[in-house]
Length: 392
Ligand SMILES: Nc1ncnc2c1ncn2[C@@H]1O[C@H](COP(=O)(O)OP(=O)(O)OP(=O)(O)O)[C@@H](O)[C@H]1O
Ligand SMILES: [Mg+2]
Image (cartoon, rainbow, N blue to C red; front, side):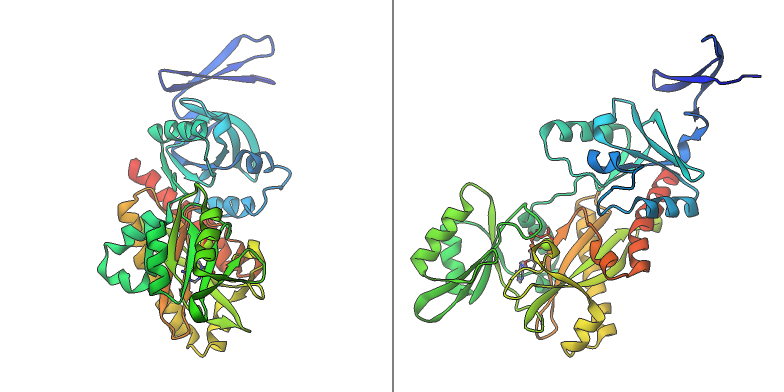
């Protein structure tokens, strides 16, 4: 009979060993292989890689937009064990993290799970190096979750049937800016690698070669062509930007709206749409981002008010979104969970605006779209389970 045992873990030649010590500190049991960390079956374990701040907030339920209890609920249903980790606590072949089993968390050091769903943003060279190390011994899906918008545009442009859904897009240069001024009555100048609507400029042609320039939430500036060029040059500085034809987005109460579409790989790695939510720009703004005053609205209601047939439009948006995900997924095999910004113009034509690699899913939460919200947590785990089984 072993009372009050201590467990000491070690890792020898990638074979995990748990040594149980009795009260006097002498070895009494050694366990090798899958029995590790108090009986955790590694072949059922899926890693969830979080930002450190989110990871540290798990037990106090301070995880920001990340709804950890939905991951736990889905894992229970699927019969898998979740191991929450952050890069700072991983080493070459093990990680210290929180294992959720039987409705409670345990802090354990476990081998690197064979499959990991990445929900962290890793930007520094050090973090990227750690992420690459992790990916050497594990299948980390959505490993890369920030993409250059111009690269994504070019990838999609190779598929002919998608071209009609892509706004004309050019790399940023003075020559291209002059071309855009000739070609488009309205266009955007956007950072290629930013988010939450930061750094976005919109230009609208007025009479006599003058332009309305929209920046942040200011009233539009009325500028001559040369003044607009100088203003943009100054804002762009050394950052990478692109130039994009503006879509004449459908409006709600005079405010443009677009859509957030969650597309994820699920059973057998197949892409599926788990929800479509509308985002309506704040009064006077050109961007719909919720972080810039945009509001989430049910898309059915927006479509109805725009005179579109809601179910048909939803179906059409789903079809284009699935094709976008399939094309991107073929070229970027790690990709498994994306939040697409899709636009519908005033004539009902569907446009692709951008793909987000770490969808925060908060539109669904705000709109109390509980099924969609839950599905966005369950589907990546269904996919993870499929990958685990495939690896054997
Ligand atoms: N070509 C366009 N035509 C019309 N509206 C656009 C266009 N490009 C961007 N917008 C508007 O600006 C918003 C922000 O643009 P985009 O999604 O490309 O940038 P972002 O800053 O990366 O946002 P996110 O936080 O989603 O990553 C879009 O949701 C849309 O409302
Ligand atoms: Mg966006």
